[in-house]
Image 1 (cartoon, one colour):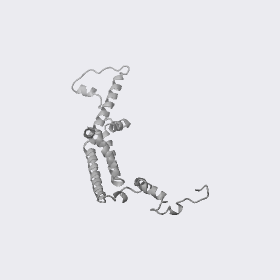
Image 2 (cartoon, rainbow, N blue to C red):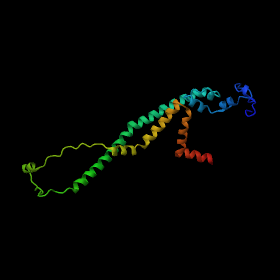
Image 3 (cartoon, rainbow, N blue to C red):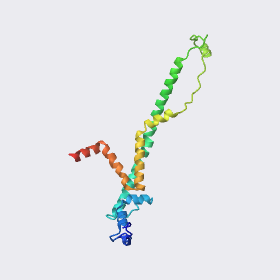
Length: 200
């Protein structure tokens, strides 16, 4: 219509949501509310259209999301207090064994200096006089290798932290973040068993 100079047939009705020319309004109305609320920096809990079908579901979802977040926080806190110290201790033992192995290798390669002879075995005061001074306590410096060992043994902690963050996002932004928990359930043996029963 623009090439012939004639106006758009529904130009006068584009602002009427119930009219025939409400093309733009129909497109916006059919758009996913998630994109509209994301562009406005709002969350799905603020949306009222998504809860019009059953408004009490919003309150139930808030309660369930809050309970889920609290249980996730308890789970990761229990792991930090009970399991993570053991992980750090095991990593420290392994790190010390590696350092001791390197020290033994270095000492075994050393040779006696020129002219130095092994001292004869003596007893009593003579032994105390010829006894060498006790070595000073060595301070072990922690390097990157120790942190790598801790991270390698902290797979469960990383997993619990990620799932706790997902639970927090579900409580703050959108309850649909709990879909990741559903997918994680089907990853486990019980979830695979449910999938097999549904397929059969």
